Image (cartoon, rainbow, N blue to C red; front, top):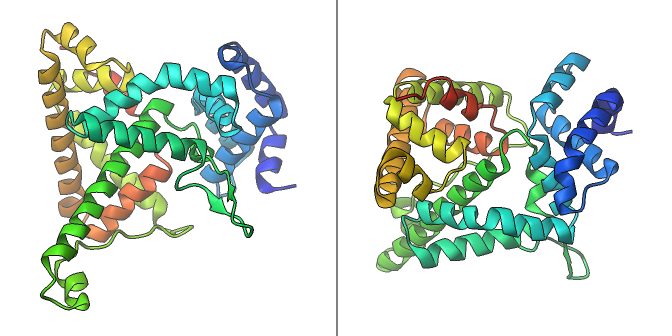
Amino acid sequence: MSRAQQLVAEHARLIGRLYEKIRPSAAAYGGISYGQFEQALGRSVEHRFRAASPSPSDVAAYLGSLYLEDLALAAALANASEPAWDYFVSQFRPGLYAAARAICRQDESVAREMADSLYAELFGVGRGSVEREKGSAERRSLFDYFHGRSKLSTWLRAILSQRFVDRIRASRRMESLDSDDRHNDVAARTGTMPEPSVSAPDYDPDRERYLSLLQLALAAALAALAPRDRLRLAYYYVQDLTLAQIGRLLGEHEATVSRQLERIRRELHQGVERALRAEKRLSDAQIRLCYEYALEEWPFDLTRALTERHSV
């Protein structure tokens, strides 16, 4: 029995109750088997406690904190359920395109290209596919890496943001190579290329510390925002409202809402990096690790942070 199986086996009754809890919502896309749901919980628990020996109460508390309905849907999608994919396309595709447009600053063609390429990864025929010896592709869905610690819509936005950053980096590498033909290859790579991304190891003993520092820095940056800016973020990230809906609530044009959200994200990013660099004394490489670990496992409760105080 694997470690994940052992951890979930100790909580069979709780998992049974959680399964009954998600069954009504899962019926909208044909349901999910108990075994698939249990397996998804096992992956999530194993990932969360991969470097720790949790008590039964720790595991129970963790299971109770998950976005179970989203995790169940992701498990059904990872198992290539056609009804689940039909449901996902109808319920999430419009929001995914809207998020891509916001990230790309309203560039429709780039936004659609990013969103469509992400669909391939989510299904398991893009980056996540693993080549077999015979040359065929073994399907590995990106949904296998969703652990239910955030809302599915938030997780998807984070992936889109990372893909946009990857796109910019790739473009800059090509521009750098094209403009440095007069130099030799070594000079082109060491003199003008942007600093390479730090790859996160399987386990870093400082991982939890980096995540904690990032969490504290973001909480402080959010607390420093004006109440109206916190409200904008809550509408967009917590309530999943569209730019048009937020505009109607705040009496602003849709384009104004988009610009304001971009400004807030920029200010948050600057505030977080300033705190990590100046107050926590982290290097650029360590800050990159903070972000990479956060993409893998994000312990920050954004919903709570934005709903504690956001009245205007």
